[in-house]
Image (cartoon, rainbow, N blue to C red):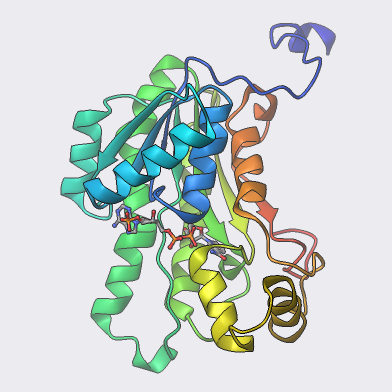
Length: 277
Ligand SMILES: NC(=O)c1ccc[n+]([C@@H]2O[C@H](COP(=O)([O-])OP(=O)(O)OC[C@H]3O[C@@H](n4cnc5c(N)ncnc54)[C@H](OP(=O)(O)O)[C@@H]3O)[C@@H](O)[C@H]2O)c1
C-alpha cells in the first residue's frame, strides 16, 4: 500500500497550487463562472475567461485583475454553445489542463409549453456545449497524462424542477455525459466529475428573490424569507455564495482530488434530501 502511494508524494496540507496549468471556465463573465475563474487564477492557473461578447469578457478581465493581482488571464469571446464557437475557442486555446463546463441557461416555463426548438436549445446550450469541448480537449489531456474536466450541474439534475423540466433534463444529462467521459479517460491521470450546485447568490437569483418576496426588504431578510418559504429543504438556510461553489471546483482541479473521478459532488447546502446525488 505504501509503495503504491509513494509516487504521489506526501501531501502535507491543503495548499492548492495550479501554477503551470491552463484552465478554461465557460460562461465566466459573471455569476458562478466568474467566481470559479477567480478561484483558479488565485491558485495560480493561467485562466481563460469566456462569454459571448468582447465587452463582457473585457469587463470580467478587469474585475479579475483587481481581485487577483498578478493573475495570468486570457479572454476569449465566443458562443461555445455552437460548433463554430467551440472551434474558435480551440484555435485561441489549443490545449487545456482544466476544463470547467460552467455555461448554462435557465428559465421557468410550464412543461407543456416547451416546444421542440426550446428542448433543442436547452440540449445544445447546456449539454452539447460541454460535450463538444470535452471531445476537443480530452484527447490532449489523456496524451499528456494529466487533466481535469468538470461539468457544473445542479440540484435540478436529481430533483426535476416542475417549473423548468427542460433545464432539469439538461442537468441530468450532464451526469451521464460526465460519467461516460470519465470511463473514456480511465487510468490516464485525467479525472472527470460533475459538481451539483444548489441555489446560489448570483445577480439573476437576487432579482428572482426580490420578485418573490418583495424587493424593498434588506437582503438578509429577503434571503431568509425566500429560503424559508421557497427552499425549505435547504439545510444551509441561506443561498450559497458563488465562491463556495468555486472552492469545490478548485479542489477538484487540484492534485489533492486525484482519486475523485466519475462522480457527482454536491455543493447544494444539503438541499437535495438524499445521501447520494
Ligand atoms: N445560480 C444558481 O442558483 C445555480 C444553481 C445551480 C446550478 N447553476 C448552474 O451554474 C452555472 C452558472 O450559472 P449562473 O447562475 O452563474 O449563470 P449566469 O449568472 O446567468 O451567468 C451565465 C454566464 O454564461 C455566459 N453565457 C451565456 N450564454 C453563453 C454562450 N452561449 N457562450 C458563452 N458564454 C455564455 C454569460 O456571459 P455573456 O452574457 O457575457 O455571454 C455569463 O457569463 C450554470 O450551468 C447553471 O445552470 C446555477
